[in-house]
Length: 178
Image (cartoon, rainbow, N blue to C red; front, side, top):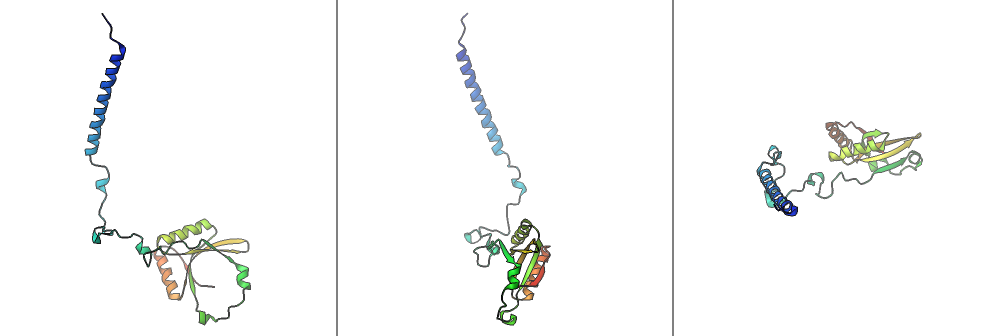
């Protein structure tokens, strides 16, 4: 009896296997695509705060952060301000009286040994829409990073900010600005 070549059997087996494999993948894809997507129906897709259909425009989500709709109020303007304690005591006295220039108040939202911790507090304030700055002060070879808000024109404004911080569980102190 004659023997058939091995190439023909191998080729036809490979061809049939490929067709069966492609068919199996197509069936699997159809089953997967017709099945519901997990987690999609478990989330409420509608939002009462954002309604893109009203007026045909999508509202700017950053608008509440600014007065004019431009840059956010809490955008960082400066990182760290260095205060030299000797320069402030040796500076000549200002010739205008405190009544003429008005007393200014600041709110201190923390004093920390580490700049990273102070930056964390500043970021925390930024998340609730409050602009602050870090003032670095060195006295007796010890550096303190103070997180401050203001200056405010009246003590009432400063106390109002202090109350707002207290509502957000941040302790603070009102001081007269130097």
